[in-house]
Amino acid sequence: MKQLHIFLILVLAAMLVACSIAAEDITTSATGNVITDIKAQGTGRVAPFDGVVDTESDLADLLKSAWGDGSLDLHRGHDEIRTVLEAYLGISHDEMHVLMEEKGLNLAGVCEHFGFDPENLVETLTASFAPFIEEGIENGVISGDEVEIWTERVRIEFSNRVYWQGE
Image 1 (cartoon, rainbow, N blue to C red):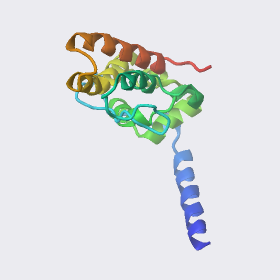
Image 2 (cartoon, helix red, strand yellow; image 1 turned 30 degrees about the vertical axis):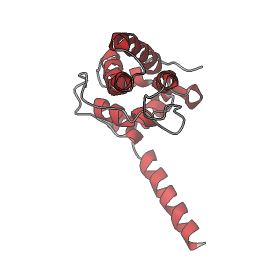
Image 3 (cartoon, one colour; image 1 turned 135 degrees about the horizontal axis):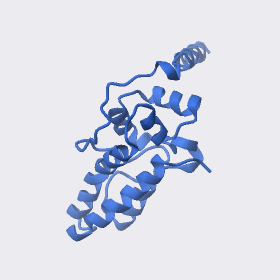
Image 4 (spheres, rainbow, N blue to C red; image 1 turned 90 degrees about the vertical axis):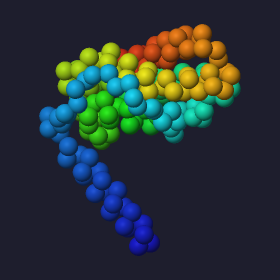
C-alpha cells in the first residue's frame, strides 16, 4: 500500500510539473535546419515496425510507422521518432505536448511557432528512416535501384504526419 501512495505522489508531481509549463515560456535554441545524421528508433508502443528491415512486410510497416497512429490526435504518436523531434525542435517531449495541446498545433504548427520551415522537419524525419531503407538493401529485401522509391514513400508519409490536421 505504501508503494502505491508513493507512486501516486510521483505521478501527481509529474503532472504538476507538466502543467506548470506555459506555451509562451517555451523557447528553443535549435536552428530549424535539416538534420541528416540521426536515426529514429523506428519502433514504439503503437508502431507496427519491428525495428529491422529483413522482410518485405517490414517496409510496409515502416511506412505505417512514418504515418503514425491517427487515433492519437494531432501528433499521431511519436515514440518511434521522439528523439528526432526533440533534436530538430530543440524542446522536450513535454514542451512539445504543451504546444500541441494548449495551442492546438500539429507538428507543422510547432515548427512555425519557432519560425522553422516544416519541410525541414519532413526531410529530417525522412533522413532518420534512411538507415532502415539501407538495411533493406543489406538484407536483400530491396535493390539499390529501389532506394529512391522507398525514400519518397517515407517522405510522403512523414509529410502527411507533419501537416496532419486531425480527423
